[in-house]
Each structure stands twice: as structure tokens, then as C-alpha cells.
Length: 282
Length: 265
Image (tube, rainbow over all chains, first blue to last red):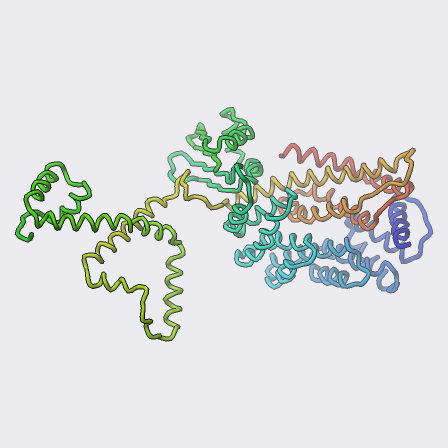
């Protein structure tokens, strides 16, 4: 019955968008109109309808969900982050809150808290730190990722245990790469210890790149990263360096494959301007 | 032995083979004739042989020291020690061997020399070089990590758009004309895409990828609706979703943003 109601709901949301008329109760109509406005990012108008729904139909089955969408609107408007936080937190506390919307609310709380921190409210980070131990791993992982972006390295390092766990246990390459980069930011030594623990017999472990400008003893660019991030590292290389390599007729992907096979070899490229690029694998 | 006019400072150099040929010959000839000096030289040779063995241990110990953190550690310990109440010395002191050196200035000097020498050697070896075996830690500049994240944002957005497209097309295909049964929508797929979108939000905003963000936001709202539904969807309902997506030209917008991202990767 519940599923049927939702389906009917979706039908009317979409039928309203395609101009079809249908008979609905006033609270349903309000809710669907509000959701269409949310879809189009007409935050203010959507908010008016959602408030209208909650005020005039407090017992409506849509009143709860309206709280979630209210949070969306308040986040979108800007400058009302604290109200948005309250709306999401209120939604999560509802007994009939939906799992998918709870997950979304948790993510939005983390985003809003981070935004408040960036505006100077350091106490807002409590909402992120508190979610590092969340039972839902989607929430836990996201909290760790966001915390790793905090400027204060001491605080950011609190994300390390969760990030290490991701590198240790997760299979999803997208998540793994994010966790590795986040760990490189906050605690490279933690990344090293977790990568060293992984059994990878015979395969390369570390990619090293150095770039020297002409006549300089110290490299202008140094990089030591896990081999797993090699592909990303090449993508992120400076355009000028990439151009210097291409100009010499080298195919970077081929080079990396060859280096990975031989392990011992070092690629050394001298640019026309006298700069030197060295790439090798250990 | 004291009667000999030879410079005893040269003995260590002689024993370690560092003397010039002429001096070495003179020293060797003298030692053959002078039993006192020979005995003293033998004793010194034995001491030097023992220190060779100790040298390796000292180098190993020195190499295990975190030199960057050492000043802080020493300071911490000094402060901690100053806070501790004085205690009576235990009967057997592990540093008891120091008293032997105290009693023998020559040995103390030798040991100090070895420590300083080993430490100097360590610093010489520790100079970072491009292929130094000790350069084993990970590091990357903040600027590089930002660029890596931008590359990742482009790839992941492209991946998100492609997957979203597949999900939507899959649903629409199954709701097309002549479809035998109700369309199946996998709400788990929608939830997975929603969780990916969280990470994209931060990146798309940070790297000012406004167009990509707008289309991803619209898809997100659609999936937010669909994620709340599971199981079979009647064809008529799916037809209406398709109508909605077509009206907003969502698939066309996805393709356009995909093309842009592909050209940037």
C-alpha cells in the first residue's frame, strides 16, 4: 500500500511537470508542486509551499518529508545554513524517516557543517567529527573525506583511521583513490603503513617523479606516491611538463607500463629549456 | 716505549693503512726492532678491531634515531625529568659501563669519536637524492593533490553521468512500447549514485564546474525520488518519467556535459 502511494505520488509529480491534470488532496498537491520547484532550484518559492504544507497540514503524511526538502531549500538559498542543519536533524529524528533521505540528510549535515567551519565557526566541525563513528559506512566515509579537507592538520588527521580502513578494505576504485589522496593530505605516513601491509607480490609500490629547472640542484617538483595513484598522477601533471614529454615523442602510458615491468629503469627527459624530468618506480 | 722518538699519533694511521709509503716503511722498520712499541701497537690493533664491530652497531643505532624529532624529544624528556621526584639510584645501573670510560679518558675519547663519526656518516648518507634508498616516504605538494583531485573530479563526473544515463535508459527501455511486463527499477543503483554524488558536490563546487554541477543536481533529484521506490514500476508510470526527462532534455544535457568533460581529460 505504501509503495502504491509512492508510485501514485511520483505519477503526479511527473504528470504535473507534463501538464496532466489529476485529482489530489491539497497537501499532496502542495508537496508535489514544492518538489518540482526544488528540482528547478526555485528555492524561495518551494520553501513557501513547504512551509504552507507544514503549517496547514501538520498531520499530512508528507509533512515529514517536507522537512527534508525544507533543508534542501535552506541550503540552496545560502546564508541560512543553521536553519538548514536544524531541518535535516529534525528530519532524521522522525520515526517514519526514509533510509535514503536519512543518508542524504547526513551528507548534507556534513556539507553544511564544513561550510560553517570555512566561514569561521570551528565548533561546527563537531557535527563532522561525531559522524566518524557513524553506523552507516556511507556517512562515516564521507565525514572522513570532508574532515581531511580541514586546514587545521591536527583536526584533519582525526580522519586518518577511517581513511586507512577504506584503503584497507574497500574495493571501489573511486573510493580508494579518494581515500588515498585524502591520506596523502593529512597523514602520508599512515598511507605508507597501510599500503605496505597490503600484499602485492611482484608489483611496483611507489611512483617517484622529480622535475629540475635548469641549473638548480634541488628539484622544483618532487612526488612520491603509491603506484595505485600513478594514473591519476600523470593526469595531474603540469601541462608544460606533459608537453615537454610529448615533444620528445614519448607516450606516457606506454612509458609507465614499461617502467612497471622493468622496475629498475629510470626515465630521464631533458627539455629544450634545460629542465630535467625523472620518473621511476620502486 | 717513551724513549722512542716516533710520533705515537701516527700509530692509528699506520694500523689503518692511512700512512704515506715512506712513513709507513719507517714505522714498520721501527716496530720490527722495538718490542715495547710492537706490544703497544698490537694492543692498539686489538682495540681498533673491537671498535670496528661496535661501529656497525652504533651506525645502526644512529640510523634508527629520528633526527628531526630528536630536539623535541630531548626537551620533552628533560621537562618530564624535571617534574619527576628524585629517586634513589638502583643497585645495578644499565649505564654502569660509562663509569669505566670515566676512569679511562682515552677509551671515552675513542667512543665519543666513534659516535660523532657515525653520526656524520649518517648525515652524509641521508642527503636526499633522486634515487636514494632512504627516500621511501610518500609525499606530494598541496598543489599537486589539488590537480589530482580535479582530474579525479572530471573522471568521476563523467562516470557518474554515464552510469546515470544507463540507469535512465534501462528504465525507459523496459517501459517502451511492446514491453511485456512492468519495468524494473533498481533503487540500490540509485542510492549508489546518490552516495557518489556527495563527493562530487564538493569537487564540482571547488573547481567551479558549474554546468556539470547543474546537470548532476537534476539527476540527483530524480534519483532521490526513484530511490524511494523499489521493485516493479508499471509501464504507464515509467512512460511518464520518460516524458518528464524528455521535457527537461536531461539526456541531451548529459551528453553535452560528457563531451565537454571528455575533451578536458
